[in-house]
Length: 185
Image (cartoon, rainbow, N blue to C red; front, side):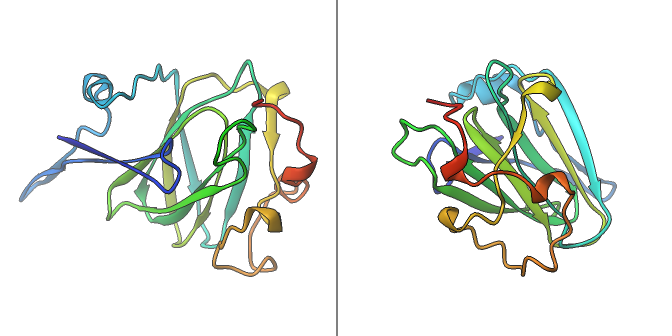
């Protein structure tokens, strides 16, 4: 069984798949296309990505791919815990520039579905956090884009001081929302 609810931004979905548990452990059908379609979530996922972060306070993002290689993402945590953030970049959307922030963990077993037109990032809250996510388009380096994770206009409460965040050099240099071209007009 699959349950789907709206995040703060209704186009972002929080999804939970049942766990069938016994003394051996559990089984969970985390993605069954038919069940997703029954909930109006008809996506053609083409690639799975697995990311491991050893240290808490590792911040990855905010990332997106520009059209025609834009991606929707279905994200879940297989080990550890993180704060997952999706920022609406669709200029014609009433929620443009707003974000949804959702805690995902191996324990709460939630997934987040982020549609095309959103920047995505996350902050690990525990050591050895592992993230598995599906995407609807292949990685295209020439369309790889980002948004400043600490842009004050976004109002994201990451719960961490900028000095403590572990970031890549690339993620330190992304433009602010006001300086971002209208990729999703």
